[in-house]
Image (cartoon, rainbow, N blue to C red; front, side, top):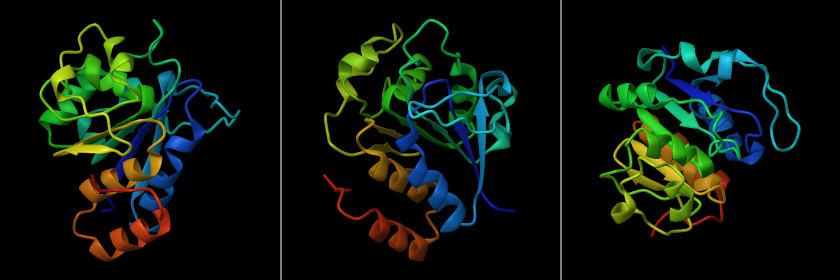
Length: 192
């Protein structure tokens, strides 16, 4: 059975933040990619894309995926943003790979997943918008994704290293394909 990547999209999601990850998951690694939105409804990206959802965020269970990627949106810091905290905590307990990019890191902060792990985001100020955020001592201001075990965080400007770190955590045994992906992603620095 192929490994399963669930991708959470909400309205005004950032088009550029999931493409490297989702295409590599399918093309390089033979994985299964599914997209989930609030209520399974159509959402519109920053660039006007309207992907067909495979299901509702609310229907997701940690047993439905091997990895979950929460894609950034300017709506994650608004009152109407979906609360995915219970799902994220259950997925963390189940040992799933969890990736958060851009304002999607707010979902991780709200769930308490960043309180004791190294992480990054667009800025520490971004994460302070989550009243439950207690991880400032672990925040890293770096121009690449930060991986802490199975939890990966990134700023919206680090979509390539985000994709590589999530893929590395999800497909660690596929070293040849990871090499192809690293070469394909090219110039962005992956190491500190």
